[in-house]
Length: 295
Image 1 (spheres, rainbow, N blue to C red):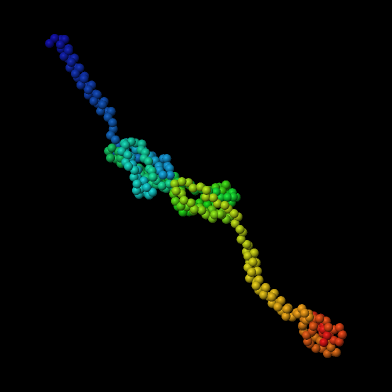
Image 2: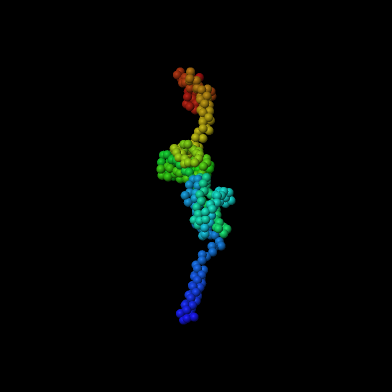
């Protein structure tokens, strides 16, 4: 082999070794950039509601890895209702709850499962929007500060504002009774019933009038005294009139009473006549009333 051939052979060997070396380094570099394995747990965060209405709400949450979505919900912590599972593998989740009752508290639990079967959940509660029931108490002086009681489908109370307006809000469908009260006033009508059925109720108005003031204790006692003694007093007056009628005869003015009679030095007792009859001066009578008559 010539010198030139020897040099070429050695160069070929060197190039082959270099290629092998570089290939090994490339493998080492590629191995260092591989994606790490997914976490062994699924974390759920930021569970909350949004866009609450009288009949529905959205529920949103976040997971640390892509996962599917579903929600359990109901009016107790036992739930009782579930949405269909959304199989989309996402980290930002949103589900819509519909067909809910107005003015009602709902409990819910969100659920997600990732591709490795890791499962997570988280819960909370919310209240759907309700309807309002409102009215006005007139006149303003009576309505201002009046207490209005609500009973029936819910129990609550409200204070009318300085214009006599009152409002109950967040009410569910149902039947209610509204009763106003303000010391010193009587209301017409005394109360009103209303039914909430998918909408607000307005115009439950009342008119207030000053309540009549009861008689004082003294006046009441005088009134009772007069009523109790009136028959007795009338009976006594009638009795006196009867006695006087028996003693007094209007025809001859004969009012007889016991008198002493003085005649000829003798003194006797008898009944005299009210009319003076001593014109002849023969004798006269005199009594306690200083009345005289002839014998």
